[in-house]
Each structure stands twice: as structure tokens, then as C-alpha cells.
Length: 252
Ligand code: ZN
Image (cartoon, rainbow, N blue to C red; front, side, top):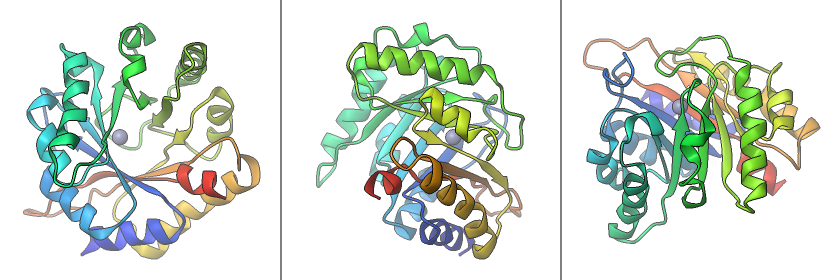
């Protein structure tokens, strides 16, 4: 269907990851997709499937999203009183699958959440997702303090000799990707409303691919975040299909 067409277009345009935003109507106001849609995306692409859980009590759903094909699972620090345990659970979810898969574990921070939330967990992580808008809606303006946060986080990661990826989610445009890349973000998202149709999706992804090919070939990834919102009754609400160009550019 439309979802598969969008994913295929993002893939053709050069994307390497597909990022899916999962919202529960509690942690964030919107309600979106569940494991069934993640499974549908999984069937539509061989790209890395990056699942961002903007939900309360994510520990109750990790196994389901792992079984649905998630290769990266990111939870919010603000939603996890037992974050260390939840991160361990993401790893274990991959171990329990047949065949076994290593699932990348990520933590996301809301715009106001301090990097201190990562102090005793950073070495356990594969990825930190810095929110550059308040989670829950597309189309918001980029919050500039995300740049300082990313620069500080990059320093923390390098100071500890870690290889944690930094991903940035929300309000990113072709104007902000340069500063974000210089600050140390490796996965940068740009969002777009609506199911665009394959050609428009490709047209959205292409400038990012070109930008990175020209300016950041060795340093950075880019990513596109789609917010298809024109769902009807009974349709799954798909929010945030993100195409991450990082892997592609690393391979170039
Ligand atoms: Zn997201």
C-alpha cells in the first residue's frame, strides 16, 4: 500500500534506515502505530528499522517490537524510572529471537532533559536521540539549544572513548543540518507531513543525499522524517518514517 510505496521511494532515493515514531497518547498526545505497522515496514524494506518509542512503560512492548523486526529500539529517559533495566531488556529481546539478532539500544532526551540523565548509562548505549522539538507532533520549529546539547554530548562520548551514535529528531532543515553535523550529530532528521507519494518522497530525500555527498561525505549522515497524517478511519496512523542516510554515506 501507500506505506510500502513511501518506504520504497525513500530507499530508492538513497536512504539506509527507516525510523518509525511510536506514540501512545500518554507520553505524547498523539496515538500512532504499533508493532503491526512496524512489521509491515519490515516487510517493505531491507533497510535498518529504527523504532522510536515515545510511550510510557516501554518495557511492556519491547519484546513485541523486537519480534516485529526492529533493529534499533529507542526509549525515552523521561519514561523509564528503571532505565538501566530497560536497556538490558532491549538487548535480551534480541537474544530471545530465533535467529538471534543484536538490537541496538537507544535513549532519547526531551529538549529540557539534561545530559546528566546519561551519566551512568552512556557506556551501555548504542545511540542517543536528542529531541530538537518537543515530541509528539510534526512541523515544529527546531529548538536551537539542541545544538549545544549535541556538542556537549559529542564531547562526553569522545571523552569516555565510546562509539555511541548521536541522532537528532525534529524540525531539521537543509539550513540546520550543517551546524548539527559540525556539532557532532551523526543521524539528522528532517520531517515532512503527509503521504507524499513516491516521487515527492524521493524529491525530499534527494537534497539530503546530495548535501551530505557534497559537504559531509566522511563525517555525517542525514535523515528524513516523514509524518504521514492523511489517514482515514481504520487506517493505521503512521507517524515518522525516517530515512537515515548515514550508513550509505559511510559506505561511499
Ligand atoms: Zn522519532
